Amino acid sequence: MRYRVWYGYVDWDRDVKVERAEFDFEIQCQKLPFNLREISIGRVFESDEEYYSTLRKEAIKHFREKAERDLKREDRYAVMMLKFLDELDETINLLENKVEDVEEVRESEITDLAREHISSLKSLRRKVEREIEDVVEKFAPNLHSILGGVIAARLLEKAGSLKRLAEMPASTIQIIGAEKSLYKAIARMKKGKKARVPKHGVIFQHPYVRTLPKKKRGKMARFMAAKVAIAARIDYFSGELREELSQAVRRRYEELRRR
Image (cartoon, rainbow, N blue to C red; front, side, top):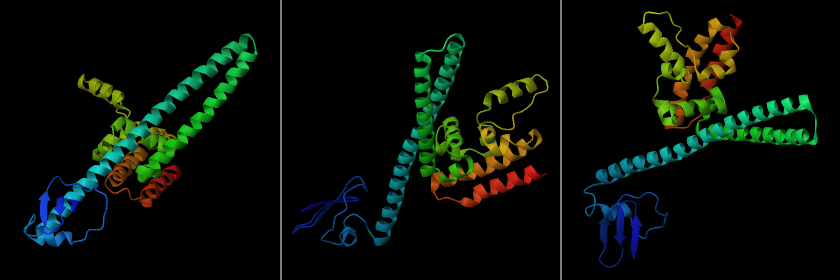
């Protein structure tokens, strides 16, 4: 009988034949009538050390690639939901303005019907926002705990992916979303003119930053960006929630607010 194993095939009959093929860790688990390691030594691998070394190396490679594929799907979905949320906001604002303009001239059943549709869109918006929160919390729990789902998804949109965000230094994360202002400031400085370098980008949307006095926002943004950089790496490489990160951010906010 022919069996598919992680490194190839085994023909289990009177004359045992072992064939090495492409590594495959997605094969269906099955109970083998033989000790796979024992029949592999001397046929495919020269020693136990080589067998286990190869098994460990290929297993790590396989599951890392699988994790990256899964993360890519999840962070792409979160970003697509974020774009949908933004478009809903634009549509709702546009319709509300138009309805108000019409009502200044005349109230009618049409405007009442329009109000009902706007209410339905707002309900859909709340559902989309909850979906973003749930998805981000699932694949990036530390980013979610610090930033919330929507702001975390916006950082991922600007960075391109969780992997790219995890590779960024805190100084870059701090100004993500303020690139245009940064480039303008650099251009002015090259001409010898005074310019204000932005201290925060997307992170400014977080209440811990925008609710502080202007003089303290830069400090909070720097501290938060440092914790976000750590959170992104943990989320990408392990996915383990570290509650101390969000707790540290909250403590820093409370300190700055009291001063």
